[in-house]
Amino acid sequence: MQNEGSRRGGSALSYLIALLTIFALNFILPRMMPGDPLQAIYGDEALVAMTPQMEAHLIELFALDKSWSEQMVAYVLALLQGNLGFSYYYKDEVSSVIMGALPWTLLLVGLSLLVATAMGVILGIESGYRRGERIDRGLLAGLMLLGGLPDFFLGIVLLLIFGVSLNIFPLSGAITPYSGLEGFPLVVDIARHLALPLTALVLVDLGGIFLLTRNTVVTILKEGFMLTARAKGCSELCLRYSHAGRNALLPVTTATGLRIPQLITGALFIEIIFSYPGLGLMLRTALDARDYPLIQGILLLATVTVLTANLFVDRIYQRLDPRVRYAH
Image 1 (cartoon, one colour):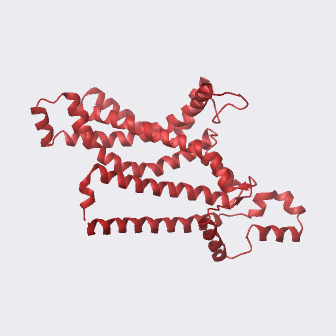
Image 2 (image 1 turned 90 degrees about the vertical axis):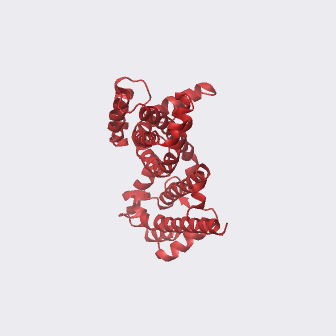
Image 3 (image 1 turned 45 degrees about the vertical axis):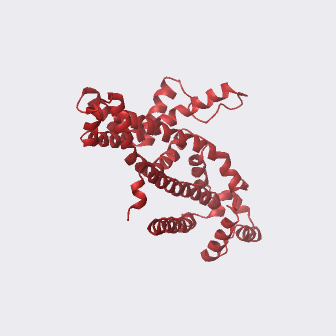
């Protein structure tokens, strides 16, 4: 019990150190960007007509006259109070602006994670169980090819083929503007707008989880307990999923924690390509406008989400494999 408590304490300390590092980087990196924030906010023409008194007032209002250490203290105190600041560009609280775009990003990333994991595990089990057969070679070649393509490149290809040439799916947005749809027609409209960006993310992420599952199943098939189960007369379906597939979930769970940062990064680029109104498109707008509070808020949310997801995956892995709890 003492060793388990010490291990949990060390794990919590590691996550706390990572969180503090995230806070520091999230504060410093936006301020290292080139350019004048006032010029980015109000434009060249506004600065020409701006009097020195107005400029001094805006600098004081946005805390641009304070040192980095003073700004850092104010930033941390505001975070402790749940205040992410005020967006220069959107003229609203950063938390309110982010909450308007967050559901779309969660929908895209969450569905891509679920679909890619489910498809990758199923295809990996089938391919590993049929190692060397035609279906195994075809899946291996095709998914490795797709996995090697950048997500933004695959998104552009899908957009040109199914959006421009075939005109099957919408080119941009999350819903049709001014459509007045409600209920099931609204769900269908959201699904049509989501289809292409979701497909791009799933196809890029699918190869890695497929290959990991396939290789794990190939290794498990050589284990003694598989031969014992076959000798006992277990069906092929039971051997494939209850024995080989269940044991293949352990490395898949571990890899999920590493995939989440890649999915979030890929989603940011995909949202820009498809003009999908999530955090990625908002981050691009904030970067163009030098909107420091909004940039900090989006980056903070993304990094804390990744950290929390890794902590969650760590706990799930301990449940799947109790031996990890007693590892030293």
